[in-house]
Length: 115
Image (cartoon, rainbow, N blue to C red):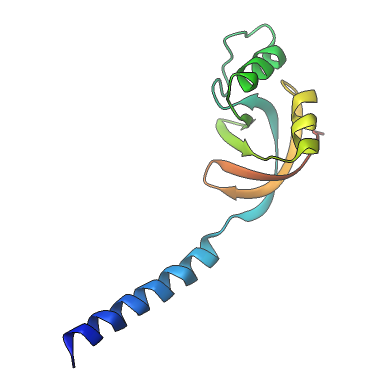
């Protein structure tokens, strides 16, 4: 077999395998309930007396919203204005977030007050 053709076949196989794995590795939609925080402070706020104000301040300075679930902190990613408004209102409070989870990042689909 021609070495160039062999290399091209191997490369094509690897690319196809990579595309297949990425399709299955995509985040699965999940619903998480926890406390709304920010990615800078996580579970421990500088302003511990007022976690809501601390969260809003950190987000204004470039942090993302986050959700603290038990001992895990999920960074929340969204550009949806409704979701961002809900996260702002629920800063420091319990919320239920639905979205695609990829490791410790959630691509937010919806936010509502936690129960």
